[in-house]
Length: 605
Image (cartoon, rainbow, N blue to C red; front, side):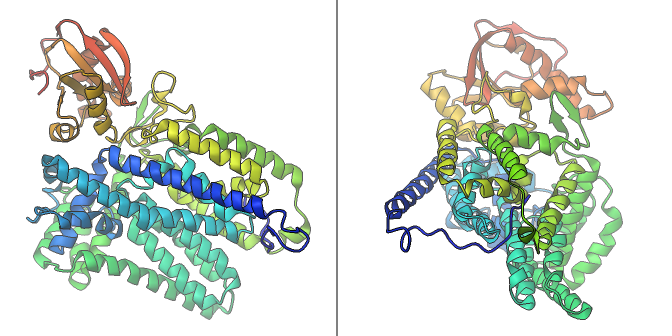
């Protein structure tokens, strides 16, 4: 899995024995690397400017703005505050940065305020995305390269970042307003510092690994899955039982202090009564997590902890809320035309195969064959078990948690372990610079061809009729509302005039902010003639919900029943292909009456 872990000298590009003959090649390779990084930076700028704000992104902006402006961490407790603080600062530059306090019960309705001023929305989104790219994504790429270099792979330090950034579904996650890249940075730091620490003083390793663990825990609650890796990394430092236990305690204390630091910033003007009311709202299921009455038994304990340390109470409330939502299967999983509340064991491995570019899948197969044929000597294997144990622990814990999770809603949840999964490819390419050049060039070409619709791409390279969008496996793997701005631009370019949009779950204000010429369609008794854009997820989810059990997700099934005749009528109209990659464009030449028992609503409402 991890390749030989032996010290290797750096490749010599010139000097003794080379006569300087490789210096021009080295300069050419350096220019090529600079060119690829420059291209990716340009593409990131394109995505930052052209992709609309995701639903989670608006919530993180609100939470970060409230914490920085009001000094109270009252909303979105289901995510720790570190990344949200980084996202929220651009709103402080605005004249109207949500100055009034918003409690946990009002948070979701308050999000629409952000979309009332499209110019402000664009400014804030752009600044926040550049912040995420520079503070978290670029360091994650560089740290992943450092991990590859630590493994002894020649040239791996340069190749790993390019393979990660060149993967189409990874690329937009480098700048989207999500917490995944923050915890991913923490994850690679924990693994890298643990491996590096095997040759460093044990107490230094304990402090550094503890800090990295605290960073991961401050980014997202999935950072908890890195605790076994961090503890193992500190334990492997050796020494007596007492010294090992002392280092473990010190590492955990450093991690706790790191987490506490960011909660302290988010609560710089903490109001005890408002904070306690927030805990009550979450415990009673009246906040932004759907927990029913499952947290009520915890309310007394959380309020007691709040008297001692509000930060610990908020962190535990968020963690418990996420665990309960996972247990309840709040977010229904979709795959291959089926809906299931508790997810599938095979969901993430299958999704990874679907979303990984063909060039990397073929390369992985080649690397496996090469590895099996190459073999390894006894000298290479000696001492390798500690590093293999660290990597196996990280992968095993994460993949086991993913397999048992009902959060089958986003491949971005695999970002923290992706550098470890790519290590064999890096080891293979690290010995073959020409191959590496070709692979990175192909990935860069794919990014250019797909721009800016990277998130929805599968390994068939493109969206639309040739791409099996039924393999999208939920909204956050397809468009996540990112293509609304492109929808408006393409509608203008084609001069479609008034465009009616079928996108269940989308708010009218959100659509109007990005596509003012479009109107959100609601189920109605009559469809007027004109142009219609149907989000492809509606085409997938409506039949899947109707095929599910009537007792399973009854509210969603009722909504699907309302949309079924609308979609059928549009499908019978003129099909004009795709629009903004993830919408089907239809035209009705004449009005179409639908079932009379549908809830009355005006078309275009």
